[in-house]
Image: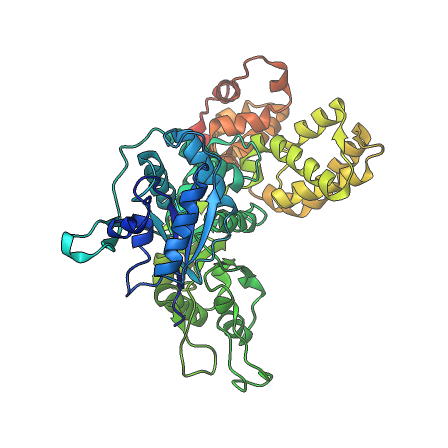
Length: 532
């Protein structure tokens, strides 16, 4: 295995690293001493400073060259006026980390925390802990009298959690990470927002598999890619993002696609094939619809996830791939395990961090911010800003948030709807005419999904006794049956109320949909528990 180059990231010590004449060689100078160990070759020293120390920098560069010609020293002047100011120091180091071309596959980084002010040392520690500097902390110590001037060094971990003066800055970084996962969309659904908050923390701290559950079009693939991009920005991952919908795999080609094959392993295998798992080395592999994998492929995948090694088809020699797995499914894998269609051991392995992404019909309050995002995206891609007029926007939103909009394709339906309206808009304005036409298109596209649902409509004979049923007018019976059907398709009394009173609630300053529905049901001697 190729040995990585050692790169030191450090701050010059204006006092510790100084010295004049030959007498300086009898003094322990931490930055120079780190390059004087015969058993350790420092390939490059990234030497940061706050300016005004040009003479010292030249002296240190020359001295390192004399004791370690193999070490390239690269000075970096940072914009720091006061090296004891937390905000200035952190901001300068943060900017340095963002623009520095880290290459963790080929280089090992040591962050030197012996020199610089205490504030510099603390900030270096915190940024290394947060993986903005993807390396190890190194501390140097002076020698005993009889040991010369090199001293000792140690790769260490320090508990500096008491230094919390810049905790707010880290909070902002977390908030930026959450916003990144949501593409800056100001989502309003509390359940979804809480889930994204946790995913952000897990993505930064864990390399364990993640399972994203939810209906088609709920955004599993999009979220998996954003997790990858977030981890890559934090230097936690350096490989590719590899995505596969397992529903597209068929027969013998499934194992070959995932694990690769060697030449001649089967008819048609005219060359070696690395497979997607090896392509995802040091990166992230997203397997959507993992429930569609065959049992044999599931067993091979389990070994690859646990041991980071597997056998390509037709090979007697194992290969390695260190990838992170995110799996997606629209099935209930626990039920698939009970039915014998999914391996229990694989399910246990990928079920550590499991998140159920709600469909759009369960996040109707997020239609509006996603609408704004999609229109802005269309404008960027097509070089033309498109907007609704006020009446058109209100009409579209009333429909989009009503029970008459099941959004069976979820965000894919919404995205397609926006593209159609924006494309047909004249002079960059979407009018009521375009909205009305689009509503008709959506309703037609949903007909085949809505019709089967009517088979599950409420039957009043199952809820009301014969006497109560006989006293109902046909008008009331038809209305009540429709209300109960909506209740059974909703997750709560409030959710059902929002669907049933989606239009009239807009005219109320303080709508209480749950109470309104509760009173309606009570007229017939019914309550939520009984009808839902």
